Length: 330
Image (cartoon, rainbow, N blue to C red; front, side, top):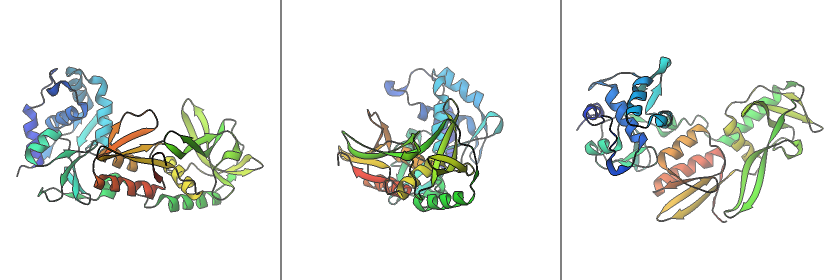
């Protein structure tokens, strides 16, 4: 069986920049994987670091220079590449991440080339999968480690964060541009749903202990300073240090107040559609974009999932995040 390093070597002759893209459709992520495989190859057991200028030149010659940052963001999210100091990038070691019946194959190599050597490779979202029955001799990585699930259950984690913040409060003067985390219940064409938001009125603030609230104050443009605050008579009189993982905190606070943030689920053409209305924490976003394909949507963000296994893997992660998963139009 060919090793992934040997597959990389074959890419040296397959990815010369060209304006004639197979099928007439440009897949810049696959092109980026091909360039990384070719430029990083040294030998069957060694890869080199690649300076971003080499990648820039390759993308410019192919007429897709504006897509380089997007491609690097995707491959970083999938943990196929690692950004180093000084503008250098390195491919990560090839490995398998086990699901129940299949495995995610992590390797910065085009899907078409992987399929030539490892039978049954399928692209899900940005990730590629193979059946667990496939005998591929590669190191294993757990799903939690790959996704980065450091928090097992967000609701309990958020409760601990709030309790800790309440003990660390110190007197403060309320900023002029302060907003309070709140939860909005809306009804639309897809049914009732709860979404996170920010309000200038402290009476709308979401709180699980009646006094500790998540706040933000604008620094400049779209940049904010986040902190926990203590309310007295509608004013913030004390605050604690900046909390970590603000995106995750919002889901945890919503769950603690018994108003979980909604994710809508629907079936379509033998598959499933997942619709979200708020920013997911990076680990959950990595899993969703790895196993589901982003679709155009007039409301929220929509993702298509092809199999029950992938759907259940995503759903379990969203439930641990504290989401309410409900059928569209319910």
